[in-house]
Length: 296
Image (cartoon, rainbow, N blue to C red; front, side):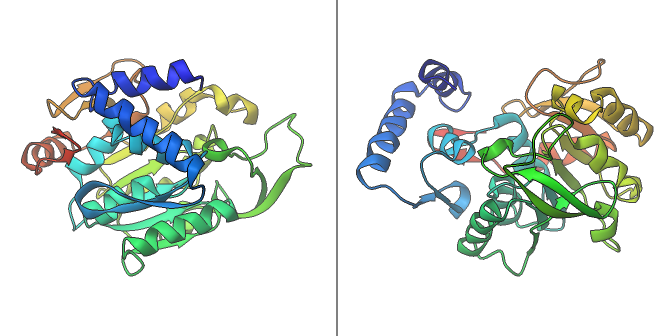
């Protein structure tokens, strides 16, 4: 992302729109401070949560600048989850969503991160938020069957399973399993899948998980990256629709769900919901969230 694109994203972010100067000061302080004193820094986040950040970690540093990097999706997590819930994070990276779900909202969690170096950072964030007894973490990939796959390991938030035509000379071999295998006997309520195009394979290994009526919300990143595996975005939509889920976008400020008639939303990730009455009731009753000088 270019400097212009970064600054545009920061100043147009819903949390920063009316506080652009403060946002730019946060950006400048991080850029200067991280160069003067390089290394890891513990950042105080939402509702007493923390995360460990260092330069180059795009997802985490955007949380510093904007409060919530992915405002719609993260706002939804903060509004819909309760301590009675079980949150599943597939493609957890260093744990932003797990921290929000399990530290800020007190849910139990399972998180999966295939890249060993990233997984160690995930464990550090779990530890500093005292989540070790509430979150089960796995250094594995998730697919439609057990085995091993090659993953990239040096692409930060976009590490992925090696696809057709990609070289595995700079890739690492990772054990993979299925959600149905790992979650046997559990009843999840909210599931997040961010696997850079491999979503259809993950879903095909999670049919029992999706069939469980306790699951009411699934956040899935859907993009054209699936083509490198010979997969198509519509495959995910068809399975989710068959399971009773419809696509919505969420406005955390208005607490409003907007249903999309097409195959995906045009606002960030795709949010799949069923049991819409229960979800709307939760959203309306959720406590307000304060991020910097912004409350919603």
